[in-house]
Amino acid sequence: MTRVSRRRFLQTSLATAATITIAGTKSSARVMGANDRIRIAVAGLNGRGESHVGAYLGMKNVEIAYLVDPDKRTYQKRLDQIARKERPAAPCLQDVRKALEDKDLNAVSIATPNHWHALMTIWACEAGKDVYVEKPCSHNIHEGRIAVEMARKHKRVVQHGTQNRSSQGWADLAALAKSGKLGKLLVSRGLCYKDGGTGGSTRGDIGTKPTKAPPADLDFNIWLGPAQEQLYHENLVHYRWHWFWAFGNGDAGNQGVHEMDKARWLIPGATWPKSVVSFGGRYANNDQAETPNALVSVFDYGETQLIFETRGLKSPAFRGQTVGNILHFEEGVVAGTKFYPKGKDEGQPIPKVASDVKLGGNHFTNFIDCVRSRDTAKLHADIEVGHVSAGLCHLGNISYRLGKASSYDPKLGKIVGNESGTDALERMAEHLKDSGIKFDGKNFFAGRKLDFDAKTETFPKDSEANALLTRKYRAPFTVPDKV
Image 1: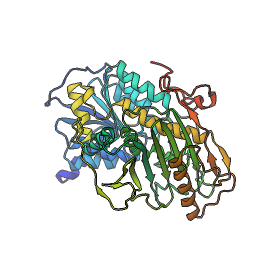
Image 2: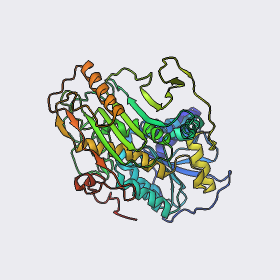
Image 3: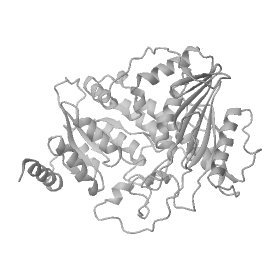
Image 4: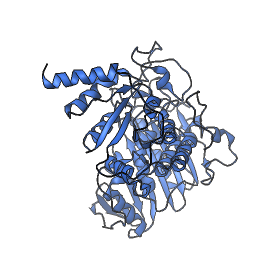
């Protein structure tokens, strides 16, 4: 055998055939030096899992101790990725609980489907492990709060995968919004106009796949995890689970979390909104998916409105942006890399305001640095930050899910007292019209306006909305009611 092929053979053999002996005590929370090896398990090996593996392979004294995924078909590509860096093979597991039993494991890096994010974070914290968890950190608001409290109780370092929190440019833009240099911030707008085409990630029509037996290499019971028992079909594994409420949160809770997080960050001091209302629908040929692929959500922050627009069909850009953020100030608009003074079409350089917060470096590196130092104050995207930004996506979806099917008309398209929200809704309707969508009284949902109590993270006097703050869990994959 050649050196490379022998190494690859040994990796595959060890990963698939070795019996793993694991001890069962918690890891310590001591401050670690730069020369101390960090042992990490990467859970979820498709999509973002490749980026997680790649990030840790590029770091000194960081070892990928386990590769975890209920689908064995994902193993070889990650083993090959490790082999190319001439690193030791990582044992492959279908169940993360086996890795959590290892007393010498320091952290878990989570890139699973959304419905596993919070539970795996909670389990890891209870086992004494630190966590990097992909966006959104939760599938619903209740489990996000429990994840925050578990991190605090067990003194764990938990980083949320909203990487723009490591960007100095976005920090400086937040400082500009706070400075008042361009007047009050009237609207912080997030856009997620993302047409997935006809490939595996399509956001349009995904058709219908028949139920069938799961593939032999997939442990579908583990894949389902906290979700209720249901039959397997090929629109779930992989990626298209995003468009089903049991597993995903639509594109607002997928790509949109990044733009939602920035939109909130840019509103000075913003956490939870006073209220939310959403409008939209799912526009496809009676396909199997459930989540909307056109949605406008309006969040009331008092002087500032956060407006979030999600589109899954081909769409023209708005002010030159498709996936990004736009800031509407009293003195003009910031879009992309330009400032457009009020009444002018020609852009100027964005006024410079330096943030007191100095960021930089890789988001994964920031996590590992904090694992070593135990200084959670230096995390760029602490779990609490992730919980609120992910929670905004959930709030918008809850309003939509409590909506009523209606025929769209200009009067319905008016959001009382909110010119900017009305404009977003009217542009959405025009975009769908251009795509050949007709509102027939069944496919346009006018969401319920929901007031939100930031202290209790509940909807006052709305039991129907509060029921959607959590889910019915499937034992033993259960998120506790409290910590």
